[in-house]
Length: 448
Image (cartoon, rainbow, N blue to C red; front, side, top):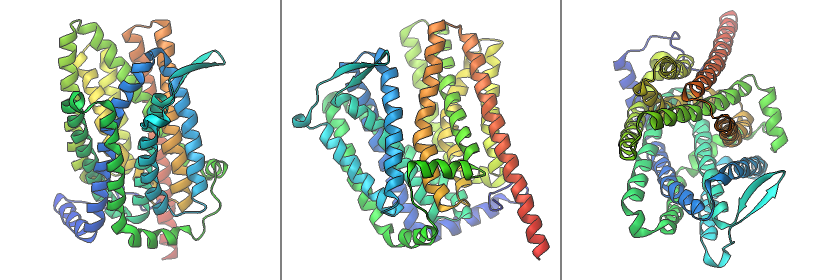
């Protein structure tokens, strides 16, 4: 792990950062162009499919069925990871990524086909009611395909770029995705009535096919890089993926980092909505506040993604990962003592744009020095399955809080505890990276 950027490894100036950035962009112009287009298309397709698929689901099912839907998503995520890891026995990561585009387009087309329509109904299992039908399957696939494409996107990028290049350009790849997301959200907001819900979702199909075209120019360069990593690769499976995580020095902590961060972000949103409801009783006032908060998330995401390379270069990965939960802890702790809505609104906004930008890029950099199995099988389990299970755990916590009818103040305490756990895990990960860097530097000095 000696390659992980550290703030004390060497001195950086703003001008040297710009020089390095220019060199990296010149060296990877083609890769940057293709991957930026793919990132924009992935998030564009999700923006036009997510909201409409949610609306379509709620057309047939009451929101009381959402816990059952979340459980179905968690089970489906486990199945997807099992298939994903098994496919790596027969195909390269580049081929899996390419096939994912056609799978995405094909399933969207099938689920929206009138001839294949399955009527919406429900069933009970162990006292829990679950939805089923075409709209339900569409909602589940919409939730799964985005993590499949996004995490495969980052896995293939991690294999191709060295640490210096990744540190400088990952923020810009994230910014391209945010711009695509904004375009999709604007399209949905402006033309939902004219185009219709199903038509908007269908836009994900040509988007997926365009992703395939954008990936095609990288087939040779990406294929050559991946062959070097595959030489020592063992068989892939769900169980092997679990073994990869348990045998790794870093993946267990990364797993806990993802789990704690996603639970915290969900609880921050719950605390924010509680204060929003308490302090703004007029519906129009609430809508206006919501508009400003979500605008700040969009603007903050793009701004922080543009600054990601500089921030990680100057602070290092460990300090960057620690700074994010520390800031959120401050924002969310103040409302415990006084209902200062501005602070929790800032926490809500920051929890989104920081995790979408700097946190995501810094976390990806930890994967770079790891083995091929850790970057593919282990990463798939963490960033596809555990990411979704974190949402399920957070949802169960929220259901419990709602059932107990706890006050906004008490829910804020749960939020602070969750962020504190996130911060502790982040610090432990930082210490482990620092300790290994010192050991490797010592060994290198003795050899010299």
